[in-house]
Image 1 (cartoon, one colour):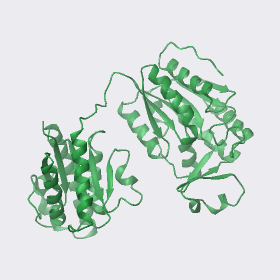
Image 2 (cartoon, one colour; image 1 turned 180 degrees about the vertical axis):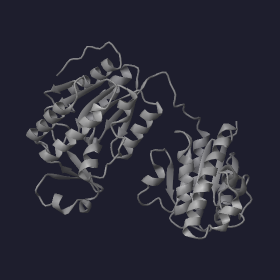
Image 3 (spheres, one colour; image 1 turned 180 degrees about the horizontal axis):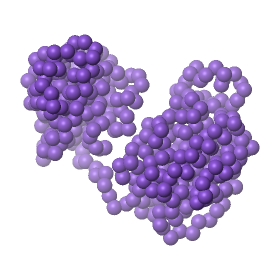
Image 4 (cartoon, helix red, strand yellow; image 1 turned 90 degrees about the horizontal axis):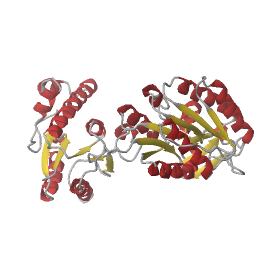
Length: 416
């Protein structure tokens, strides 16, 4: 069966570029549907689905959008209408079997519109966006989707020695994705979310192996903000059946000004849905910032431990008082849960930074955090202390055993 790709964009300003990409995809054996979302003028190349049809799908006439599209408010209204219409058009094409993947080319406004359309598609559907905005903070475009961003380097305004190979590569990338048989997201194995950072990796990997042995799919999330948001989204959608929250430091960053912030839903969704949870305070003492010079001056004056994790990530140790605030917040979120929860606390360190003689080792503060958390949790949420650090194999086995027990498996745990 021939794969179908939807090319969607503003053909009034980028008609030549879209025609170039369409021809490359067609030559690769891909059936192309070209969708116009431009509102300024007539398209520079003929679309398969014109802008009038996209606007109509949003319940508005294209002429009404063109009337005010040059001023700021009019442009915003036009982009919003065409976004809504394009999402509906792509939904229809997908239902008709004519949308196996999507490719778009955009500047700032176009990227906002096109990325919204791509985020409306399921995980696994190829999504490629060539954007002038792909060199900075792209979180607003990608969200928690599997969208692939390619930096256009030049503005998308003409075909030249720079833009041609970039556009050709983008078309080739989509053609290659479409040539690969799709992987189904569904399956018979329960899917369990597992949170991880580099400093909790040994524990997470052993837990993953244990879940695999038990016939479960472990879906691991990097807790850098986007990971936590993706976790909550998949819990809300029913893809995940529970969570082993090994690394809760996104709550720390949210409260204390760090950059790995996952938003207000973090550590709430599983509880709201009544799903089983095992919670571990992995990396809870770590506040993350970007490059060293982004760390607030008062935190890099030598008064507290600081680690340059790499050129782009700096870690700062939270104080005892700050950790008590984090403990209160975590307790508040877990206390609202309706499902089965257990909290496991490793006395000898919450991550590789804090274990043994690590640069963040501060056993007294960590114990104070654990005691505060245990004291604020409602009755019915067990707290288990283990005399190991988080990355000890015995602790990882305890975590896996307790989750399997919560999930209904007949497993007898052994507390290290």
